[in-house]
Length: 81
Image (cartoon, rainbow, N blue to C red; front, side, top):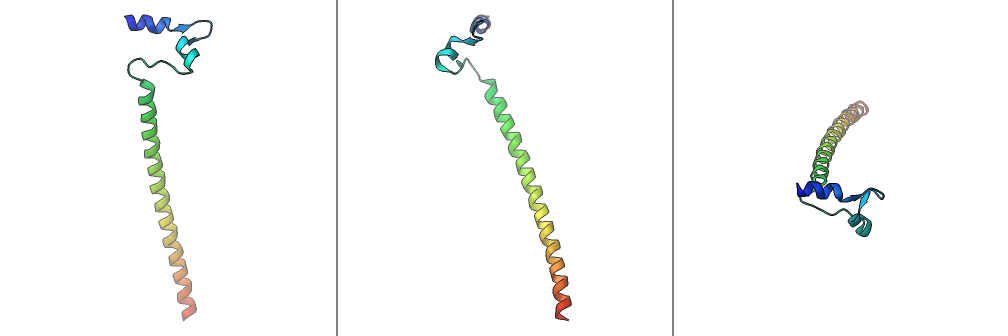
């Protein structure tokens, strides 16, 4: 209950910020920082998406390379005959 009272009284209504924020330009950390966990989850999801995009791009490039090689090989066979 003391933490709840502290959190409620921690902000000054006129400035809408705590005295700590006004003095040091950052919030006072009390206990676990939930925002950090959310940021970490977002970063992990982003890296997973980027890995998937890279894998798809790599597969597309390999397909394109294979098709180009097949077309080039067909052209070479025609000129050699």
